[in-house]
Image (cartoon, rainbow, N blue to C red):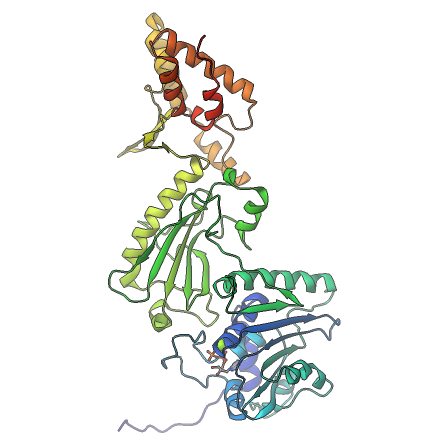
Length: 497
Ligand SMILES: Nc1ncnc2c1ncn2[C@@H]1O[C@H](COP(=O)(O)OP(=O)(O)O)[C@@H](O)[C@H]1O
Ligand SMILES: [Mg+2]
């Protein structure tokens, strides 16, 4: 028996508490995703969202065809903090805190009406923040039925025969002074993109488990990993955690921009753009929680999102039983990996980041052709004192000059050294960040006649001075940077000079 202390009941004043809960940091997209989580948990296969514009009287509704709630169920659902977050949940449940429906809604509107058609027929309850604010007793007055004049909005639910309708009115956080119908529709577009991303695994396939309609339009899934895309050289295998059940990762490196059509490049960027959408994609029950983050991991310092790693996207599945370990927040938008996973995740991320960096730097061109290493003109030297860039004297174009230099050798070596010591690293770095792409190299955007001219100089020298046969010279050039990107020009070199 625990000790009894002298105490007093100290409930919060409803109006003040609810106003404070509005600031949890949801936006319209994340709030609606939370509402849909409940629909999915209730077994819905179709969710219809409507953005209905009517100036200050605009409203947003979310209608699902799930199992609905009983009268008592709805009463509990509308209460704040009725379910304990520590309670074990069905593996398919997307909820956790027993707050989402209320906090997500209050973040966007001042009046929330939930109507449900379940075991006890049509039931409606509502919270009205203005009513709470005007109640001198500070009580939690859960109102019965829809707001007078809003009854008709539940008609689609009674027609459907089963399910739940969430109605947001008094959208004070969405409709502000000067808001136009266009702003409202732009917001609907953002919501569509966000939902297509968060629920993409539910929406995919020939027979998707879930269909979301936004103002009558089917929300299309957005797959961050472009699985099955023809431009993707390789689809990674699934890594299962060696001991923990239900934890799996897939380490994707997306194709370089040069390998994609401009539409695909745009589409794959995702709602927040390439740089922001890199990193881990954490899914709990296949619902996306975190859309691109390095999760505070890193070797030494935490990794930040930068251009060089923007092609790395790692899919990570976690079970909902690990919520406490992952510090899932109420909005389900942040997650921090537990200590026991950090090493494993860091190793996966390091390897993926390395591959992504190479794909970005080589503009998607392979450094291996068949099983032959491409001969590069620059070497990276990693010394204790730092990284240096050196011209590789084994590159045929360089070798050729050095071998023939004779008395000029010291001057030529001095010239190469000056070039190496003045690589405009800072400049390249700044320009890459500003243009969100590496500067042009490798004869990119160069007329092929110009490339052929330079190829010819090297080809001639290989044959005439080094004694290569025509075919072995071509063979060599096919794996020599930057000509390896122009196999057809190499093939077109004549047999006889
Ligand atoms: N669309 C819905 N269909 C059926 N039941 C729902 C629906 N939305 C909410 N509920 C019920 O209300 C409860 C509270 O929802 P919510 O506040 O989002 O918390 P949580 O999802 O964490 O349980 C849910 O657990 C569920 O029982
Ligand atoms: Mg919920």
